[in-house]
Length: 131
Length: 146
Image (tube, rainbow over all chains, first blue to last red; front, side):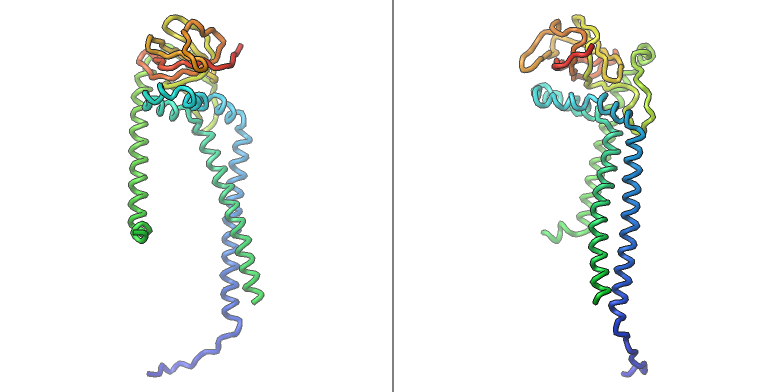
């Protein structure tokens, strides 16, 4: 059954234009995310710099390292009191340093991954625009 | 089998179980720690001046009260049954020493009277309701602080 519609002439560059627009939008989106990751990283580093002495005191004041080192020499006592030893390690964790360290690590990795993605997306955009 | 492992429902169930285990585990650790800290510090007011550390404006920093299961620090005084330590935050902590406490230096056992003020020790033990840590292990470290 005929629909009665006349076939439309498709412009020869339509496909590459659409693909180019998609690639451009992807590059823009990735750049925005990369900027946000850099901003978060810079904020975390600035926070560490502003509170450097507090972080240093937290690391120095924590008994975590000393208690963890007991594992090398006094395993017999520690394993006999495993519950207390677990609690000792948990309560001596330098939480502030761990939290900000994790945030810095996450933001660094995210920036790295997004940087690579931006580069790949730009290559894709160039190849689409050349074709 | 690989399809089953990769299915969304199985992944969601695994994450939910893992999350539940973490939440319940955290809750039990918190309850256990809270109960012990409560009974350890309920006479806090009697030792208020000895339990004040430096104040720091840092979120998620260490709690103002010291650890109750283990501590490292400088020996301030030694008697037959107690040891008083100063931890790196300048907080004094009382350590109860009994006949079951192991006192060690390097690979050999030593006696408590071989520990002198100024030496650095690591203590591991459990809290009691007298505000002391009942030491199970006292390890003499190499350093010495004035």
